[in-house]
Length: 73
Image 1: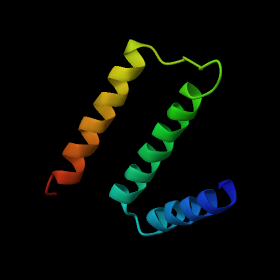
Image 2 (image 1 turned 180 degrees about the horizontal axis):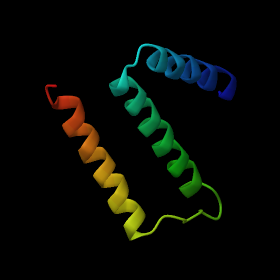
Image 3 (image 1 turned 90 degrees about the vertical axis):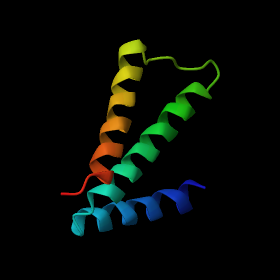
Image 4 (image 1 turned 45 degrees about the vertical axis):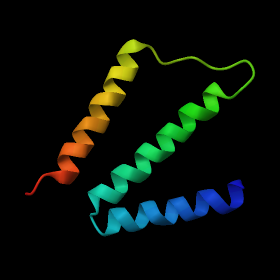
């Protein structure tokens, strides 16, 4: 799976950067971040490193991204 998922995500990320496509860049970054957090929780034993403040910052980033993407500039 690693050999098929990672290269395609890297190519999409490079394309978003080259095209200055912040929306795609942000969505890819958030998806990778969420996947990382899920993997940490899915280990045995689970790795709990985020606290309430971390979760609030994640929510703030999601809200900010939603506003930024939907705002007309």
